[in-house]
Length: 356
Ligand code: PEP
Ligand code: MN
Image (cartoon, rainbow, N blue to C red; front, side):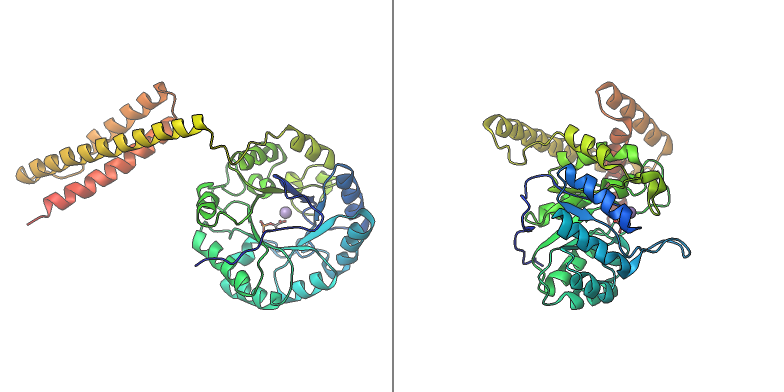
């Protein structure tokens, strides 16, 4: 289904890449909000984020300051001239946030994973003229993400954007949430006019990962970044490990390399034609390999042999992985390619074996 979008214009903000939204994970006290916002404003940040309601994994933690924090956001707006953004998860949040004049709403990852909650939010947004940013759901399900966008869009919200904040996994090694970049890339392929914000804070879950993740989002052509920043990160009431001071944020943004998204120069076209030719050759070679594989299948069938011969398979993986490393690729990548080729090979041989 197509989305009916109008450009995500924020009043008074130049929508030049990267559009930056920054502020603390949560609004904690009036002083913390004003101190952080003042520092950010001095660094040229024009859109201030702060969670007023916080969906927490376990009960007993800080679940957000609630409506009491909304007048603080109003001060940020009137005294510093910044736009304000907060997360809404229920129709009551929507009503309170819009009533307080919050400029931009975002919908959190846990909420987007729940179609009933998304429909209720959509219904409560009907008639409101407010930009809405939809985070990816916690699980890596692109259709669910798009479904959420369709619900909000169906309620007449046309100034839509998305936030890529990564996907939950059981195994948290480097990242708090796995980026799985191919998912936002595929979303962009399907909806080229839908602006994408990167959320390096929630992907990385660690201060030192913010800069490289910002750069990666920019290198992929993302439109903006939403970055958690706090006047005293170590003492933050939520997500302390991933927040940076406004000074550090400024340093990170200053070091970013912003490359053009539309570079269709002659030399790029020439290089792309070469890539196309190589892809053609790859397909032809793969098809040839599969034909031979089918012949082997025929031989195995005639000699009553099983298809998978573990030794031979391990040998191929190890040999090609090592060869790949010598050629400047990651061994893991080459092994993944050969695993996929092997899987298709087995499928073809099964077909040959069972043909009448
Ligand atoms: C947040 O932005 O602070 C937040 C709760 O994010 P997410 O919904 O991505 O977990
Ligand atoms: Mn947070």
